[in-house]
Image 1 (cartoon, rainbow, N blue to C red):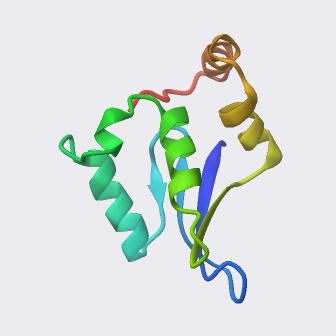
Image 2 (cartoon, rainbow, N blue to C red):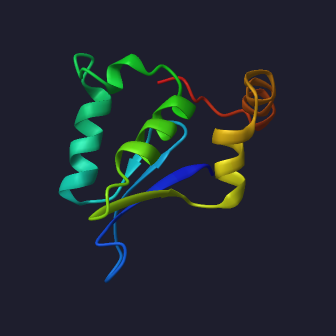
Amino acid sequence: MVEIIIYRDPLKDPTEVARVTIEGEVKGDTPTAESLRERIADEDDPIISNYTDGRELLQYLESSYSNGYVMAGYDSEESRRIVEDLNDEAYLDWIRDSELDAQL
């Protein structure tokens, strides 16, 4: 699975507050996870509603949730490679081969 993990207080006492998959599923029972579920479902969200693919969503979350108090990171080096390093054609091949639905 390709995921972003969001942690609160990452340097002192890392606590996982949410996971988001490339398929747009949000895992967790925290206010952060609930907020992300609502934002992804909200067609009027000024930022997330512009993303149509889980890859775009994960790139946004990885960059926007990394601010010191909260930190987002890929669950594995393979996830980071898929989201950040594959060109568009290779990514589409990976989606087809993995049979994932990454359309949001």
